[in-house]
Image (tube, rainbow, N blue to C red):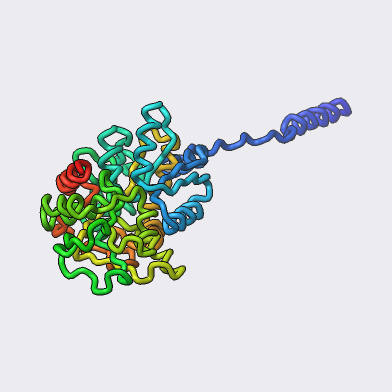
Length: 369
């Protein structure tokens, strides 16, 4: 009997030991799911860590850059504010030497269209746009629809705004009565006193003269620059300073933003812009440079830049002429904002194929002097 009891106890003990849990084992660490879609783009942009941005020169554009930096805290935004004409010339030389340093350009597109596009220094922007979430690409939010390019056959630059700009700037301390007609520009009393921002290249000076050509033809421009000896000034900054100070009473290609800054300091307060002569419509937009070093950062920037917040940052700050094609963005500069609901009436726009013929004729005349 004792042996039987001993057997039962031993058997029970074995069963208990066999069934008892062993030492706890660690659960396998779950592997996070790989990011997909737009989340994957943002993760890749964060890994790239940098965006190299070019935009136009001026204090307003500098304000815009600061807002870009605030909106993209995961990126180091290396931004340069530079005249589009200078930027285009610089990029051409860099890429000829196999230097691909820039990601994206935002700003006036005239030199982007006439210099960088034919040089092949940009890449198609549509693949970048196709990668963005759909909200900011809603056709109903953009005047003329979202997909609007400087050249529909070569979509490298997306147009984000049009501005009614240019005109003639008159210092009323020297010309108190202003100008009542275009023919007054040919009056011998203004011989050598009309200054133009270097009109031999595509810029605000030559495009303002192209506005005159559109109104009065080629011969009128020849008389102005040859017979009346219009003065060519190498930079818009110098021209703006001289017109503000009264050294030249009449100017084409004055930098309106710089003039505004000078007037806040009490300089050039008598200078006014008359858009009856030499005004034109100018496109601005976004281009992606060839072999952009940070392609995912470009996509993150584009998504913000094309959002309502990004377009407000641009339209409110970039220049005194800035606006946005995005229809839910307020109008901050009504004097230079076109009628976005009726864009069909703007048949010639500088920075696009529609304005190229008039500009080419203008450049041919100014270069031949």
